[in-house]
Image (cartoon, rainbow, N blue to C red; front, side, top):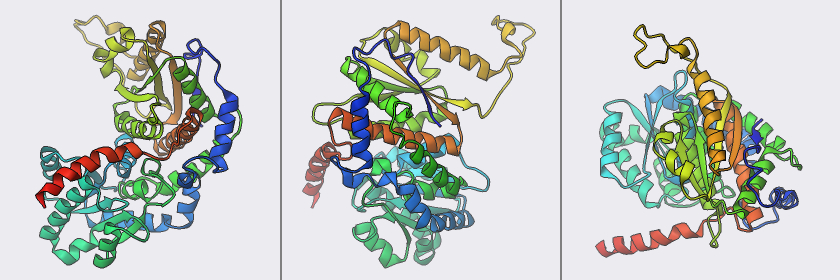
Length: 421
């Protein structure tokens, strides 16, 4: 289970974490009595998936692997960030395919780069969209559907398209039914940013060779454990601590990790917390850094800039790799005294030094430790961050499951596009 260490934060809050408010938020969440309760299906989602779509997801993943070496995942926001986070963290496993991601922007340069990476390899497409009309993935899907049809012909192309969309309605669902694409469900009671443990995330991961049965079973166990109603619950600790720091003037949270593979996990976390809490003039601004690299760029600001920052640092108890430091006969850098030690040992000393330096500089530190950088560790982090986010949103007094502000740019954008009609 996730371990949360608040020792680096407790000297910075003006009032102790409000455990009573956290308990009330927990009750509101699990009893589904609060704002947005019709979007809390993610709490039961792993059990539901196990009993409904999981066998089809596993079979489709195997079929994708038999059809080629690449799966292009077309989606934006919650329709791709979870799968991208897991894939970047875990990579292709066994006979799994490579995942490429498209439809998450409007850059022609990025699109051409993705097509170039695909090359002439055999591929399939998984288009993920609740409606099928969101501009970025709709245009991206047009491109890759056209490439499929040119390469294989319309009939064979249809066998290589997998749609994850609404169960009953929408443009993408209608197109899937008409063309015979195998389709999977974006649940009605689960918002996009909470959907990674549905077919939205599980189908691409199954294609990449990740054991999604194990992920689902572990998610069931983890969510049951996170239903503990006490301050020993790590989700309570994280939610209550960040709200206590927020009330003390820490309005920006930096999520850091010393593993570069974690970078897209931080992007998923930013959407989860930004969309859930940033409303009604309230909310902690979610940012991220990649250590050690950003210690040599953002490090100065974190150490000596305005003191509105809090820092959450994710680590993994079990290292997935090691590499001994070689000796150099010339010892020009004067570091032979480190030779024979492992990079992981040096990294641990660096982590401790950074934590203490930042605390000394006025930045509270929340440490979050996952068991290992593997599929089960990823699963625990997803469940932990989702539950803590919902609790924190309710404690803050907002609906953690809506996102009314994201429609503002869309209205203006389509107003501009409609001039072409």
